[in-house]
Length: 75
Image 1 (tube, rainbow, N blue to C red):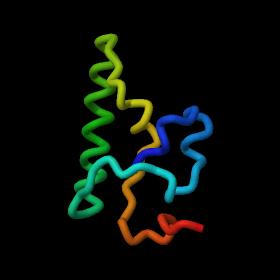
Image 2: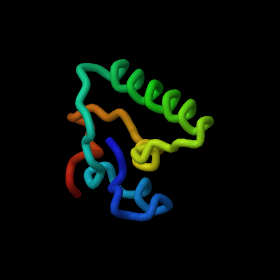
Image 3: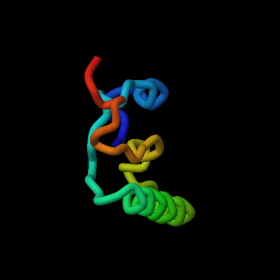
Image 4: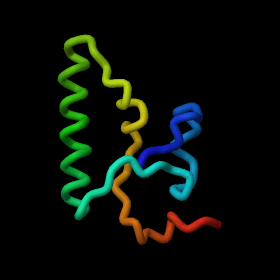
């Protein structure tokens, strides 16, 4: 899950998880963490070439969250 991208990055990641966006589903937490790690490694390599993946800003605060996580319930 990523914070709402329409908000400033200094504010978006502070939003409750029930306002965040699901960008991809995984069968387990390990697969999600592997995806995140690979994304950041790839972005780090691109950055050394002077390229920044546009999704990097959204993913920099990404969290792997189970769909039954109580923080996803609206308050």
